[in-house]
Image 1 (cartoon, rainbow, N blue to C red):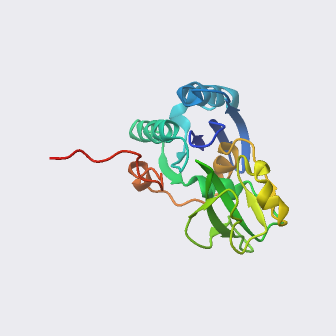
Image 2 (cartoon, helix red, strand yellow; image 1 turned 135 degrees about the vertical axis):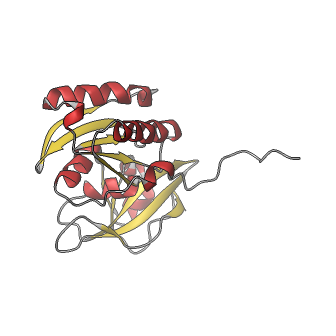
Length: 212
């Protein structure tokens, strides 16, 4: 299974086989979304898995980087149409939830929405399987703590001093593609191409529609 993430601040690609992550490549710094294809090629080479042998491809569909999200979804669609098995998508919240510590029963996944705001979605961990969403994403300012949760996973949450001041525990994940590929290889995802055409941005574009 191949997983692609261009939405988060750490774009990455990973390959997992039968419940084991065989390879993961990531990049940081400016314009990293343009390197997603090279990360994909490197991960496949590291895992010694040819593209035509892939059983499925999973892409993270946002929210997050506008360009990175579209690059990941377009790449997954191209691989799918090219014969690289099934295809699926996860939101950035769902991908983050996969990286949360196993002992966390109820927690939230947070994505930096910029402008001093964060998108936050609550999750619950069932006895078996991956964490499930326990509510819809909400937009909160950095000084407004998440509702009804004391644990949060997300890139950059360590900088939220207002949350820490009231006892909210933050977990900073690394690249997300390894956890996504692992979940796919364990049969924990639902396979559908529908999400490839529905990137999740949550915030409307900062532009007015053209007039008559």
